[in-house]
Image 1 (cartoon, rainbow, N blue to C red):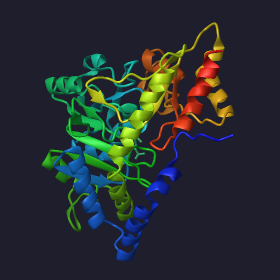
Image 2: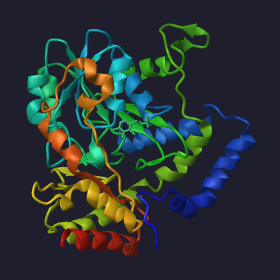
Image 3: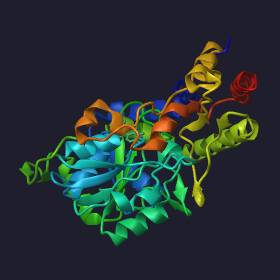
Image 4: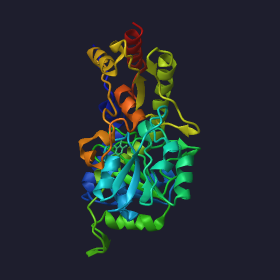
Length: 377
Ligand SMILES: *Cc1c(COP(=O)(O)O)cnc(C)c1O
């Protein structure tokens, strides 16, 4: 039985092994492993790719979000609006700076922040909104920016899962005040370890972030604020410089795979394929379907389908099984089950199918066949 993984990073490495090898060896031979020309080159290239004046590299996507909040002086007493259906990091950083995450439910078609529910979450303490471009698809940024400008709120985009995605022809990460990216290996642009970046057109914010990420130093041994140590290693920067050249091509391959899943799974009973919001272009970090539960027929339960696929060697993922308001860490915020019905329902239904640029037609056919075979019974 040929096993089909959710993502195959080893296979991607094989395709670019020679280039990566040269880049890594150059860094190793240089003797400079922190900062240096590869890091500077990456910041410039990535800033240009997104279309902003400033790009600041850092250690992870989580750090990027943390640094963004710090740069905006968000802290105790402040509230920040976060979708309830995302990776924990998005809310965790808000708590880390001493502020309070305020959750908003999601839209059942896009899995993203329900922009119609934004207004009612805003209070006199609200300082910022963190729209998360989940699974590779942009949030409705037109609406987010309108609401933010009306209430004078900052917008920090969580772009971790959507490097290269656009909204209304514009790259995400340059629409809000600050864009935060992750180069965790499974993201669309992934390092061989941790990495992150912040993008902005605000040079004052950029300068502040550069200071905070470097121990609060405005110049060497002159610390002005409490900072952190958050760096992108030279080795990771060298690898990302190679991979950035392939990003658009890889995103196109993901898109072709997504269209094929749509084509063959779009009419399967009990299954809902993901919707693309217009005028956006998803980069398909995940292809996430909904397996509808039927009270009378538990055979259509998501977990059963997942187990059946696993038996055939197909590994699927569940992002995310528990919405943030039901996480133990946020018990003291006082949210109740039932408060975010869309996220709660989707957390029971979502199933992410194998999705990576190198997924072969043959492999994809096996996934499609297995799902159809099982759900058409
Ligand atoms: C991956 C991810 C992060 C965190 O990125 P790291 O580089 O792993 O710290 C934040 N938000 C979302 C939505 C993510 O998917």
